[in-house]
Length: 355
Image (cartoon, rainbow, N blue to C red; front, side, top):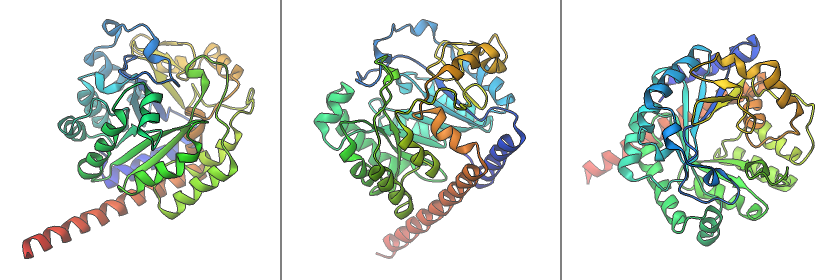
């Protein structure tokens, strides 16, 4: 977990990356394709499971050291389901030691209170748990995992009590789909009522190979999210990203995408990709990281019809002066919220002793 000073240095460094034009800002490392859920919006669980091909803990650390040397400032560990790797805490701790802002996204199924405590002690800066519906049956059906909704709610309470202290960010990852558009405001409130954050992301059919459908996001929904962001501060997405959601479904072929320039991804077997949905351009242990911005790798990016569900959305929002300033404001907000929580807990302990 980054300290107050490190938060400020992180965003100052991010601004330098934008202004100076050098170095990578963001990496998504998919630690495994294994997953114990059967989400209809994702096909990872249908892919061949080859855990023996996954990088070892030592190899992952070698890769992390390499990308840190290339200036990578933010890393998001995902999957598959990243908690299926029992070395997750070790990997997260190593990334934190290298000064990277470290994030984990999980479906919550493998989190116990003890596991969450170990993960917290590893030092990640943010942890998000997927929740897509207020209706237990709908969420569990969409995720192909009976009983998952109840487990997620339990995990959210643990997050609020045990994890969301210091300068950590924790909350819900909400996938926006045609089936839950009317529930987004309620899901944001579910996070806000616990003092947690909500992070939204539209569903994209590339994950299942079912064409190029992206859920159409209405003006009213974007306004609602922006209102919640201003009123409660519980929506973590940047204003730029939320406004860009209105472009969902438009053909963005030819528009500038920074995949392979400012952000990239690494798969479970170590292959480097300009974007999670792009072919491999090299290997983290064998090639220079810059291979993801080679002419051949970038050709695929230029030919992409575009999306904002991942890199081209929130990551691009940071690649501007206004975006960097907004992220800096976020860091200060986190610091102020933490100070408020500490004062509240101190008063509670005082009254307990008085009684």
